[in-house]
Length: 244
Image 1 (tube, rainbow, N blue to C red):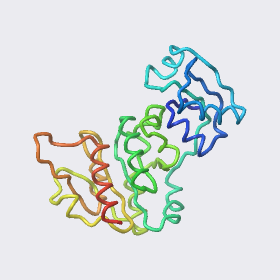
Image 2: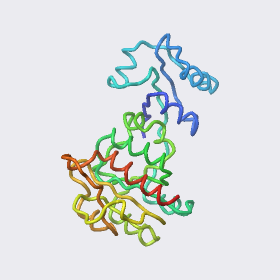
Image 3: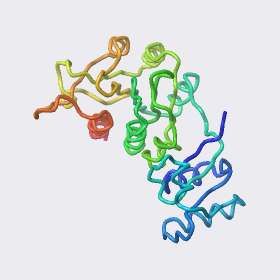
């Protein structure tokens, strides 16, 4: 696997906290003496990692003009998770809360969902190998460090993995506009997987049919649906409220 480029203070700090051996080299904006950046650079320097002072154009080119906050790092690839890891993840969690994203192809949305999943105490985020956003530098920056701590599990066959988890006692609740009851009228306790569909199209047919229950978010205004990361936050935090 090829090395990865990450950028942004949170993404760099997360790797520093979880697996600093992944750093290969760091580039920082010349003359930048940001009080949040200096302690991070000091820690990286203590690891013996090369830190280059470069101009803004070099950083902009490396990140395709993204908001890099003056720091870009080249790192070794992180741990990759697949369906074989799900059993161990379940075994290590007393009351698992899982998030399934079916066909979320925008890395901004993937990153935002990972950030919310981390905040809500989700044990793992499950996505299909195909038709899903890559965990690229954009997703990691938006995730604000959550991409390094929440396992992102890529499965070959989503419906099959869902059925396997159902056999282990996980209850699957999918979100769909045509559902006949609201998220607030649903029990979201016990071993649970929340299933969110793609931006616009929703869940695929087989994913929907594999769910144990379908719920909707009540919509009062003229807009017919929420952005998937916002909808994820609404549903996850209703689950958090009930599970307290």
